[in-house]
Each structure stands twice: as C-alpha cells, then as structure tokens.
Image (cartoon, rainbow, N blue to C red; front, side, top):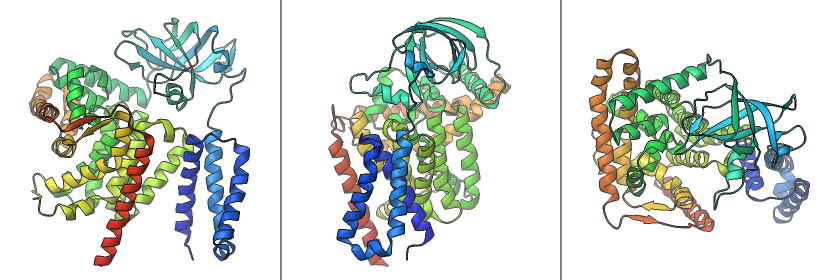
Length: 495
C-alpha cells in the first residue's frame, strides 16, 4: 500500500511533467483527455490487476499531469482589444509606470512598463521600452510614452520572444518620445534595497580599480556588463563564469559552502549554523537588488539546508521538487526559457544526492579545519555534474580544469560575500571603516582573478562547442541517472 506522502510526491512530480510536456510539445489541449484514456487502456493491457487495484491512485496522479498541461497553456495572456499587445505594429501614445529597476545594458537601458493607460482606459500587458544608456528614469516613475509597438522576435538561435513572455511582455518599443508625468514615490522596502545597492555601487567605484571593481560589482550586485571582455573570457575558459552573475548555480552552491564553513571552520553546530547561513544569503540577495532569479535560487538552496538542520537530509529531494512545483504553479513558463531556474534546480538536486558519495570517494584527501578541502571539492563537483549537460547545451563550454578552479574560488566566496556586505555597510558609515575592509577584500578578488587567468591560459583544458545538440543533453542525463542508480545499489549491498 502506497502511503499518503508518496501519493503527494508522485502527483506533484507528474504536475511538473505536465508543465514540461506542455512547454516542449505543442499539442492542442482538447487532445489530452484522449491521451489520458490511452494511458489507462495501455496500463490495463500491461498490468490489469495493478490498474484495477489502484485505479483511483492512477487517475489521481494522471489528473495532476493534465493539470500541469492546463496550467501551462493558460499562463499566456489572451490578446484582445483590452491587451496592449493587440496594437503591435501601430504608433500609439500611452501612460505607464516603471515597475522594475531599470536594467542598464552595454549600450542602452531597458524599462519595463506596466499599469498602462491607453485611450483613457486601463489596459492589460507590459511593454519593454529601450532608452539611451544614461537616462535618469527610476522605479515607479509615471511616464507618457509615444512610440511604435513591435512584437518581440527570435534573435538568431535565441527565443527572445519566449524569454520576454515569461515576464508577460509581448510588446516592445525603441527610442520612444518620453515625458515624465510624476517621479516615483520610492518609500517601500524594495526601494530601500535598491538605494542600498546604488550606494554600494558608488562605494565600489570610488575605492576599487579595474578589474577588481567590475568583478565585485558583478558577483555582489549582478552588474555583469562592466566586466571587461578579456576577464569574462578568462572566467569562461576556467569554468567559473557563473560567479560573475547572481545566478541560481552561484547561490545554490554558496548556500551549501557557507554551511560547511560555519560547521567545519567556525565549529558551529549544524542546527545553529542554518541561521547565519540564512542571514548571509538573505543579505546577499538584498544587496543584489533581490532579482527574481536570485530569490528563487536562495529558496531552493536554503530549503535543502533546512533538511540538514532538522536532521533529515534524505528529504532534500522532496523539498526541491515541492519548491520547484510551487514556483512553476506561479509561473509555468520558467521551466522552458529560464536558464537560471534550470541551473539552480539541477545544482540543488546534485547537492542533495552526491556530496556524501564524493566524501567517501575522496576520503584520502585531507579535510583541514581552516580549509575543509574535501568537503568543498565534494560540494562543487556534485553541483557541477548535474549542471554540465545544460552548460554544454546553452553555453557550449567544457573546461576540464573547472572542478579545481571552482573549489579554489568558491571556497573563498563565503568570505568575499561577508566582507562585501561589511564593505557596503562601512561605506555608509565612514571612509576609514570602508578602507579597513577594502584591503582584505581586494586581496581575495585579485587572487580569484589570477586563478581565472592561469586556468584559462593552460593549453588543452578548454573546449568550445558551437552547437551542442539537445539529444546529447538527454543522453548525458540518462547516463547520470544510471550512474546514480548504480551508486544506490552498491550502497544497499554494503549494508
């Protein structure tokens, strides 16, 4: 007899499968009841006794699969006269409010406009507006905009229209005529977060030279655009480019490493180490401006650490599945087009399954108190193995030196995060306080840049794939699953 917890787990798993099916296989929804019936007939022919005995369980689980399909299909806006995208291709005059922090790119600034009033009535939908680089628009500014609406389209191999659709953006316009009707009343909590972020960026610009300044701005604040191209290439070829952005992979691994640092170096009990880990990750996310990708990754990573705190690490897989299901229930479009969601999900999944195995495999490697090298190596490898197929598919970069560079770099990132936050606070208080924190922080940043440069320039350890096929990604994950099954089988045989 299957217990209730397993029924819930498999139902939620099939809900995610349903969203995945809807995301990657475009089939009209009315066909799915036929698929539902076909599956029941197939099961009856293969295992009639099992189906008859568990008919309500099978129907219940398959219903969650259909629910996932339905949830994905209704996530897209209906384009009619009440939706602003209905007017794509036309020159229009409208009013709207900036609802997200302006996104400053290399040669322009992106504004997301919502709460749109067109023809004297409220209109559904959002618009992406491109403005010059050094524009002074702020969150919550009310604008009057005149421009020609365009429908987002794919850019080469990048499905840009689907990328924007995850934010419910189906229209964009460039270099519009804009008039500020009302400056934003930025007094909320999120506005204070952005104020702190901007103050930190100013302090970094004052104290740091390049490339340390752009590196700390990227890894702490998510301002990747400032990093010189040569430095980006070093980090990419060394397999550590993920620390140049507030990525899901970045935060997922860091949450685990902070926990290891607290328990192994500071000798804090695991149950109590959860709280400083929680505080540091939350402060880090706030410092970055609380982007959605960082918030999602933090929730996943901290959920896994919570299972360790309560002494139930085996529940980590379920926590990850439940967290992902809730996120997909809110926004099912994440699964297909949000690379950060995919990377953070797979990284945390690897962290829940493999560290203990690697700790046994590397048991001859020393685990010093001040530098628990074996634990850092096990943690980073666990995450890297699960994200490798996705990294190859999306970025086409295979670095054989990545395991070593990741261990060396990520092992000091918890300290960099802590010093970075202290530097941000010190910059608000007094010049000399910031100067005291600046020196050790600069030294660590310089060391990481040096590691990236050396790793990138060792010949024969970095490979670039122009077009890594999807079927190879699937094969790699199948091989990983078979490997995991073999590991589990060997563990049971030893017992």
